[in-house]
Length: 351
Image 1 (cartoon, rainbow, N blue to C red):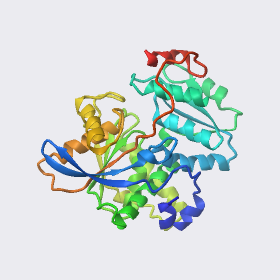
Image 2: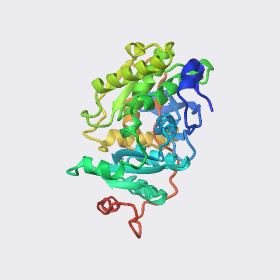
Image 3: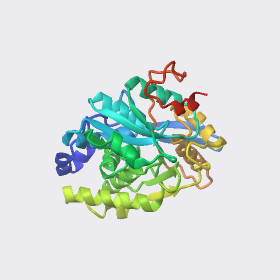
Image 4: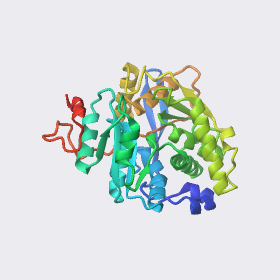
């Protein structure tokens, strides 16, 4: 298992142990593709295969977070998300792998085809699903399901300084792959931007490696939760705490981050999509062999496709960071015969 962060900063490697859930480094590839304005070469970072049970970007974050939970003798983890949350599902699957119980506080969302599969996987694993959001009072809920249960709370999306460290590692990992000649240094990286932990860490990792690459962070969530000010605070906090653990990690690394904030493919809401996003998902399947979705990665791919066809494109390498798991879930999307641990009002997602 490669650990680019520990290679670059041995002292951080000593202080920040991981649960070793990810198979790293994830592959990079170059593909020639055809667009309406001509042939292009696109690079892909295959974080869809970070773990054989469930891939995606959450695995990198949860490695560090779960190790902290284990160090504090937790026997349960708890987290938050929408009914079809990739993060909540990844937390459950990986917690089950290392023997931790899991509670997921889940809120309603727009219906998408993947939600029934996600809920059925929760059902199979026995996730404790708690209906969350709306008019439900949170304090009594937290007292009931968290208090005196030896639980470690994982923030929404795993996006805290410790989770972001997983993507500092990812940025340094990509720098190692570039140095080995696996791919040319990309001019731009396109990545879905939800709870911002992946983007914050990636920006820091690339800056620490002194790469000139721009990160095009394609917003997929409401700007109450996803905005540049919150991202900047998370970046600076992560850099500061890494510096405290290892002074050789520059606390001012965030000042060198090369961020391009993208709102133009939000499509009006979380899990809302338009024709450009549907076309991007189809393009990724047909020409790159990638299985994307319309809530996160389809929007990032739509941004890349738009830019690579512009008149000012000069043949630079644009890299798509695939944050969506490509592992097929071992369940169907059919309505279950019995609800078991699925809340009754989540039956709407099977209609």
